Length: 179
Image (cartoon, rainbow, N blue to C red; front, side, top):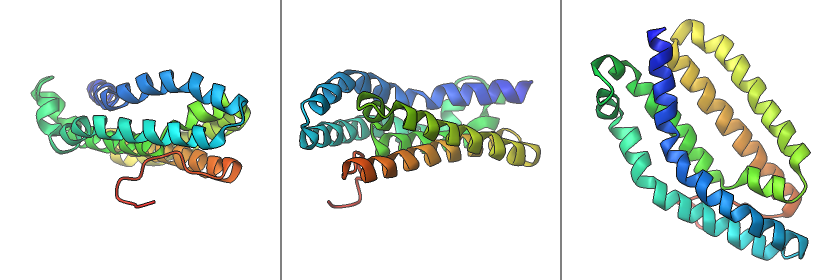
């Protein structure tokens, strides 16, 4: 039970990095819908790329703190929570990939591809369940963090590839890759 509490705390803290993502994506989705219904795909691409870039750079300080100072962050909750420092770093990696891939869910939902997004999410859930079954018995909460991160990366990459094939462009922001 202690480890479950530590894991839950790590998961909640790692969501700090996603708070900005959720906030900005919520404001971007109506604009995506409007531009898509006007058949302005180039504008959809521009808006999604700009929001991805903005979210990445604004979230970067949070990512750095959670990734490299996870031991100190977990210490704030108590000495026993330091056991979750590596889990926090692993979960933060998933949030970094989530941010880099951009507003995958918002674009798919705003453009009538909600069934495809449901299917992509379902694949992510299956990956998460299978990875948890394999990793938790051997690695405990670290296994759960790895499974969660792996499934988040999987559905984000699948969604990004689906968007590229469907709309012809990437919506994410890849800071080390020149376009």
